[in-house]
Image (cartoon, rainbow over all chains, first blue to last red; front, top):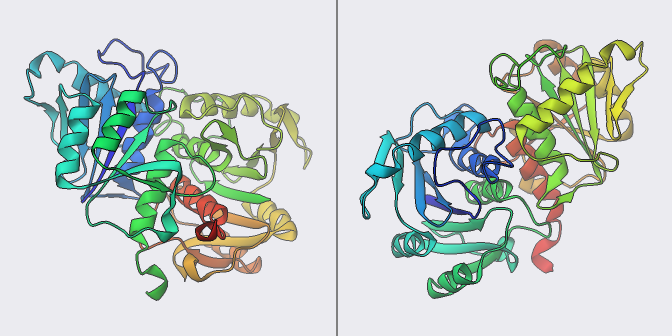
Length: 198
Length: 198
């Protein structure tokens, strides 16, 4: 299992946004949509062993599960429409009870710290960070939980939560990448374990 | 210099398409837009040593040059609008004379074979292919020209042109990736040359 937790600091928490302005009015939802695509989709395929969790405005966690999701398309707009449809059901997410607007998509009222704690219990948290240890030297964990931020840096409280979870800092290369690009590289890093010996 | 040549088999050759239906009516233009983004943009940065060439319906080649392009945003819709604006100037592209609708963006009436021949003269053509030699074993060329296809396989004539250009076949991993994901991995492969020794 590979999990990706992406913090959308400016992401919407209500469905009142336009699909015609994802970068602006929808708080860089374009980036989060690309994280879903690159986390779960390959060419003509779905990564059934992967999940992408989006933290929306530190109020909700929206999860796309590759093993169960249906009709997920790679373009930003259709994924944003899925996120909007999930947020239309937000009133049904009470306490820590998730709502599942469609198979493999679930919305729950959990902030970053709470979701990180849940994921860290079952996997190995890894913070993708420009100053981390080079990934080329790192061991590949069985159940990595990659934690990424959107276009903003992690906030102080988020950094504290990452420290509490004992997240390792790993760098994918000398260039700072977009979150979805980092997800693509992380997948490839895991995909190519032993690849040169094929 | 790193160049990427992406064939958009169903891509539009006129500006008569809607920004609200990039995957359908615009012939998977969403994918080509992501190729531009992942070819040229990093987190808060532009890859000035990279160029992305899109072959549109085997009629035009549209080039985005990282060294000169301005106001390029990472979302699909704004890039599609740039492509549409370029196609609005298509009548000004006469013979092999390019038109430059904005700095760093040029449109020329060249098909895949012609553009591949031009690029192969100045760089090393590499076909990213699932059955190619593992990238982990391959030498990193100084001036690679990565050649990719959209959601379709290369057509017979394109495969012939790649053979004429003596393009090497290289595989980035055991999973077939979307073209833009392959671009991201290819960049990272070049970025991390010697990275573990940093």
